[in-house]
Length: 363
Image (cartoon, rainbow, N blue to C red):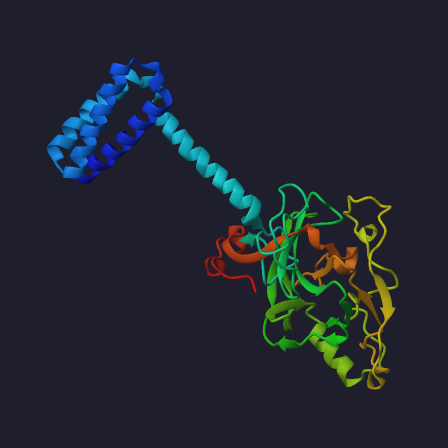
């Protein structure tokens, strides 16, 4: 109780002195002197630690302030409103420049992130942006290979996407038989034996479905993460390795990249961007090692990522609309880097709340 009284006394002293500074000219000199003297008595009582005097002088000063400066005193409602207002402003500033929540809307990043995951995004890591624009106040550092980023989709500017950066400006990218090549080197990939299934949701049918897949561990830019592919891929890869010169299987090479033309928003069926937007980047022949000339899965041509762009792919390699379809992402479109999952939930039939995913960092 004593501590609370002392706290209230200090608060009242600050209020009385503020009222004298701001509104003292509105009252007679005698009133100002009386309030000032009462404040000094309370101050001395606090310094002496005399509990009885503190209570008496607190009451006396409070009565004077209420009598002569009632209009300047904050009501409880105003006090709460100001506190809430300050908290809201701080929250908005944090959301605009530091961290933002994001909900995973699709299965393109399974298994790293599943539908229903809620994550926090570090918006400061690449440099703060002016809200509602793609202009950065300053560049902190450039995005790197292997990082998972949230960005404004260049083909649908009203939507945010989340994918993994596999190549940065100046890099070459190629995908053959599901293998990713960056700068002519095959990204280290290892098959993970065992069951692979996941829940996916179709926006068209508005239904959940259980899909089978195959797991692979991939290492890029110091990051090691899991990607998933068609259930048939392990068998098809084994067949291709036994007979590299055989005609390739259409399933194994269904997502080969690049094709015959540079990808752009024109290739995205859901694009809302201008159709006259020119594709960026270029396709070049890939140098081929003599021992791979007869290999149906060997590099043949690659895409060169242009300056100021990154090339992104989903970890669900068989079911992801990404740079393979609509081209690279401008670095200025990147909002931030995915941090960790703070909540994860699906309908009860698909698992409900996934407690084991809450708190997981994004690989």
